[in-house]
Image (cartoon, rainbow, N blue to C red; front, side, top):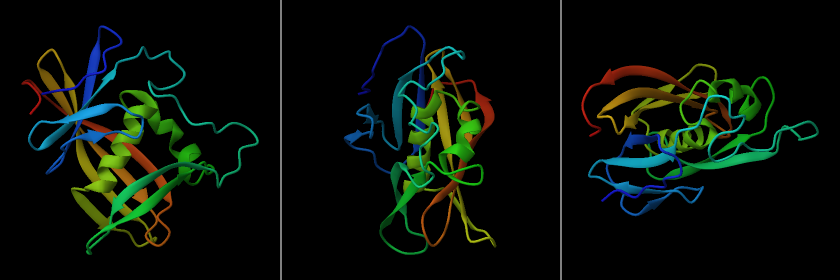
Amino acid sequence: MTIMRAVGVHMAAAAVLLTSAVGLLGGDGVAFADTGHVATRHVEARPALVATGPDGSPNRGRGVRPRKIVAKYKAKRHQTAGYRTDILYCGNSKYGFRHLEPHIGQYFGGWGNFSFSIAQVLKRPANWVVQKNGNFLESAPIFQCFFQGFYIIWTFYVVPQIKSGTIVTAYGREGRRVNQPCP
C-alpha cells in the first residue's frame, strides 16, 4: 500500500533504503509507506522557477543569527548502539544552512526532499568515513522514482562534526538511471 499526497499532475517520489519503515510520518506531516525494505515519500514536482521548495524553506534572511536552529535530526551513533541529535544551524558561508543552500537547487524536490534525505542518511548511513578534520562523511543511496517506470539513484552525503553533531554541509550527486520500476 502506498500513501500519496497529490497536488499536481507530475509526481516524483523519493526513496531511501531502510531495513524497516512501518508507519513512518515525516517531520513535515507527509506520510510515507512501508514497501518491504524501501521507504517511499511522494512529493509534488515543481517548476524550476519556484523560489522555495515544496515544503517551504527556513527563514534565514538578514538579521537571523548563525546559531538559529533550522532543523534537528536523529542520527545513528558511530560504532555504538543508539542515536544522537545532529543539528542544522542557520550558519554562515562555512557551515550550516547558508553553506549548503546552493546545493538545494541542484537536488530534486527543493528543501523538503533535501531535508528528508539528510534525515534518512543520518538515521541509517550506508557508508561512514571518519575524516582527519573532525567530521564524519556519511552517505546513502536515495532513489528518485518516476511513474513512467524508471528511477535515478542519487548518492546523498551529510557532513556532521563528530563531537558536536553540528551539520557542516550536505549535498546529493546524481547517479545512474535504471529503466525499470522503483524497487
